[in-house]
Image 1: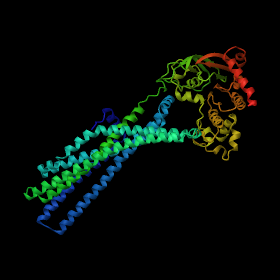
Image 2: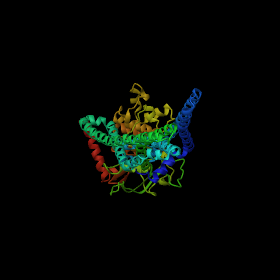
Image 3: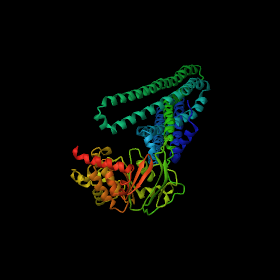
Length: 584
């Protein structure tokens, strides 16, 4: 059997350490259970030997009630041991799930784009469940087996050394089987867990993209893809089941052979008057006591193998270190005025050779509105994410109120900057709760005020449930423009001095977009808006033009539209498109 790695053993102990008192209680109960289990056959041996020479009804009743009382007490204490040890397993399961979820919240956005959700869900559910079985069932089974052998063998040897050794002579074959098949079980279990993660990810992805699947009539393709993965999972599960189905009956059968050996040799020993009837019955009961924990060894090994695999998968996730976290000497910043300064900002995505941003420099004064424009792939979204430190930028490049944002406390930075991303993610919750997500205690007056500024209030009032309208997953019950304006209202509700909008009006028509910008520029906020809507640019204080990650122009709309360059070309294209719209 593959031995647990030392690191896995340390981790297992760290899981259980907070509940060491409960573990001691559970193990103590098992000690008492096994002492009682050893004592009952001794009482029975004494009763049989005594009754062979002096049969008295009163003695029979006394021994009978005594054995029943001991067996009842044994059952009660065994239940306590199971409740306590299984309870520790449940506590460890709770702690691990909580720890994983909190770790998810600390991990960087980039991590989730590189790891499928199904894999993460599998580790937080199926793998944690396996660890729970390891801590609960496996600990109980192993401790009980050790105690059963530790207490039973000395008593058996005291009754008859030759018969005890003969009865246990088949047990080494069990341990050889455990050693031979341990690595196979572990590898098969790891394969099942990996395949389950792949299947979970496919289900999650298809559920999210169901509309796209139907639009392109790809149901048959997705069905074949799912069937293939499902079939592979079935084959892996069957391979694991075949191994277990071969081993476990074999464990029980080999363990039962000891019972037959004892019946054969014990009867000869009694015939030769080497062993009393009471001693023979006691030995039979002791061997029977060892058959169950020995046969259970197969299930225990499976739980151990699953637990080892799952501990490694869970710990591999917990070992992921967020690239974006508070500096050791993080500075506090309160209140935030809203001055942003960017100096030679350069950023390259992991795995890429070309920088997404190159030597970008500009500044924005408190209360100023800056519009960032440029072709697709110019680096607009990357710039917005860098400004609110959603990307692991190097120190000394972005400053808020004169402070390097990489040295600021993240909670202060997040409270000082409201960010509305290009993807308008909405939760499966009422519209009002989606809007007040950044400030859950905000009253309906503030919620409606933010909706008015985002020009979604009037449309919400047309819904039957109005602000209590339940939004489906990812906002599928709303149109694209309605989702974006709801997400914008969420950002506007947050009382942050800096507002960053990453093409947050892409699904809104130009006239509505201009109306929204006119309403929010009246606020005393620093606003930076990356957009493809050039009709917004004349409403801004300044315009920043990006191309291939570089700042190629910056100034007011009036200045840039009169200068030959990229902005002039973009503006002319925009005007031409606007002129052609009525003809469409």
